[in-house]
Amino acid sequence: MKTISERHLFIKEQLYKNGFVTVQDLAEQLEVTGATIRRDLRIMEGENLLRRNHGGASLVHEKVIELSLTDRSLICPDEKARIAAAAAAILGENDSMGVTSGSTIEAFVRQLQHKGPIKVVTPSIRLGVLLMEKMDVDLRILGGRIVPNSMSTRDEYSIQGLRNVRCSKLFFSCDGFSIEDGVTSAFVEEAHLTESMMNIAQQRILLADSSKIGKCGFGRICGLEDVDTLITDSGISESLKAKIEALGVDVIIA
Image (cartoon, rainbow, N blue to C red):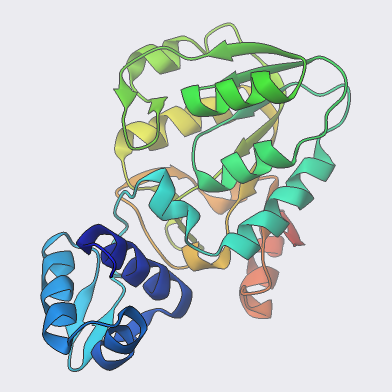
């Protein structure tokens, strides 16, 4: 029998996959009573992870909340893998790059097959270690307060570290994007840091799966017109793709 933590992780996986769950299905899949599932859903609703409704629960869509990297990696994993592969193909042998934090950016780093030495700047300790294990890299990790959920820094000290840095490409992600609100993050500090990283890059490449469409975080990173390339998945509608391209953005469907 699964522990309560294992049950909650399973429930989150099903929510991210389907957008909703039912008490009956979860009880059968987890081999527990309906009362146990209803209690789990009540606890998870208290943590703002879902919204209970008659017979089950659905994801909280209206506002972006910060999740751990583990939780974020459960959202659209196949789409993120394809987006990451498409992004990795863009990186040239003579490029230097900035990378932000996040599960999609981590998937991108894991896809890299760069052979030559490359200069990289990132606020992510986690990705810095991964890069050094994978490739010949001249690495600059931005200083500042470490955020446990993302294992990265995001404050004024981080921004100060960018003062004398320039790179050819920035690969970044977000918590939500739309024509109306632009590209957003759950936190103002992270949005400010990402915006500052955009200012040091010649080409700004946004990696965002279609689950981010229409969502809006508290911190605004930029307008979509400030993005050079958006790499997303086939979940984006043709009409939205056309509107984004009309802003001068190169949209790649992975």
